[in-house]
Length: 253
Length: 284
Ligand SMILES: Nc1ncnc2c1ncn2[C@@H]1O[C@H](COP(=O)(O)OP(=O)(O)OP(=O)(O)O)[C@@H](O)[C@H]1O
Ligand SMILES: [Mg+2]
Image (cartoon, rainbow over all chains, first blue to last red; front, side, top):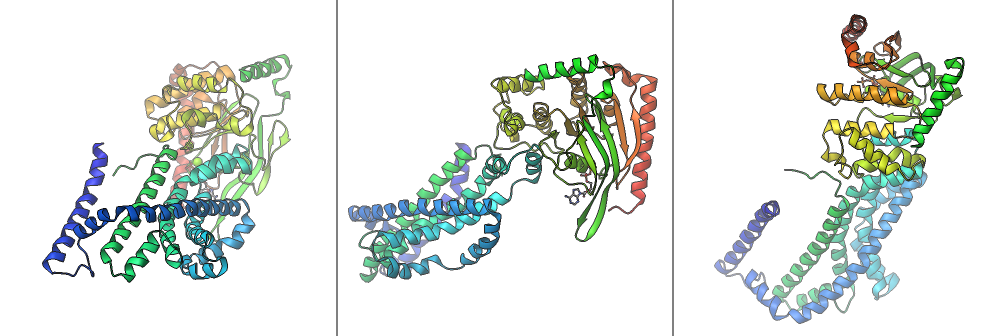
């Protein structure tokens, strides 16, 4: 308990300090609230408009929770397939690395042309965004098992499948999770962008509405919600990791 | 349980046969050579090595660091192919074949996501030979090597010496008859080490498996072995073969006997000479 507190308080102090500076500078320099609202304004706005925001938040959350597992799953399956088929890996791995440079989000408008305005293009977009970090991390993890353990498995007469299930897969779990954590935050971002491109509800849609009304305070409320969604998803994944990787020595620093 | 009956059968076989050596050796390595090429530079690691482990014999290898002892084990285990030479087990050619030996690597290499108990059972799991009583047997052995209470611990919670003992058990409980032990006691302090030596001596004299054992410790080799091969520096080749004459069962006291001390002095002398020769050559 003590040690978690020790971990939490420095960033907490930093956040409080940052908010204080923000609040003070807004009132000291008389910054107009449509340019930069103060933290207090944002807090007030978020409570006064809670019910409407709730529906939008749920819409974005729903989109995220559909797209994220699909994207992560596809990334995982592709990584496993490429790992088990070395010739396919040689052919596709460079392409996957290269295609990481294509900003998946920029494909949004194209997806609308191909798949219309429904749920499908949004799910495809989130899948694309989540796919790469998971696939790349999983492939890296699977290929980097300990050499001495690998030698042991081979000399003990382990089959390819046994080596995969008893050595490569478990030793790739930590790397895999770092990919999944990245893709969790990408998933929320992907959902919001998908809503910008075409939607009639969700936090992304709400932001567009408020933009045309110059309601900067409400846009900030939306940003806070996005951050919170990402954090919650990230924390759930981190907890899952902690439970699955409980065999790992605790880092003491 | 089944291991015990197997061992009994083996013993009676040997006793009842008129000549103990009619059975082919557990391991026969003949004319093994090996070079590695790394960044276009060729290193000759082993040069025409031939050695033998008869059924139920304890054989040791001593030699300077880097002379290819671990590499020899990798070849016997089928991990590395020799450039020349053959490896026979029980009269059959097994060069390049895997899964024929029980192995303890130089680094413990316990699987960090497995509990100690699951680690110890790994070899049997791979070979598909785990029986109902295997878990109880593993726990019984863990207690014997001072690891009771750690059955469900993960390897990182153990000290280096405890990890080595667990890795040793993993080899001991493996279904294969021939054991290759690569410096099994190197991470132990002097006291634990001599305790483990005595324990291994007793255990081996009860069970008589065929063992090939790498060590840097001459006293350890003399105490445990029927025969010792002294390796030269790289490229490793066999300089001397020493048959250790002491009768069994051996007790600790033999380490004080004049004959033991004489052999020890002789072996140390050879080792020093090799080390000195290596020192003069520019390393690599
Ligand atoms: N896969 C490999 N590729 C290239 N060189 C190798 C390889 N394996 C071993 N060597 C080299 O072979 C030599 C012998 O190594 P080995 O590990 O067999 O020595 P060793 O006798 O076990 O030494 P030690 O007593 O220190 O354990 C070393 O110079 C090592 O660098
Ligand atoms: Mg070695």
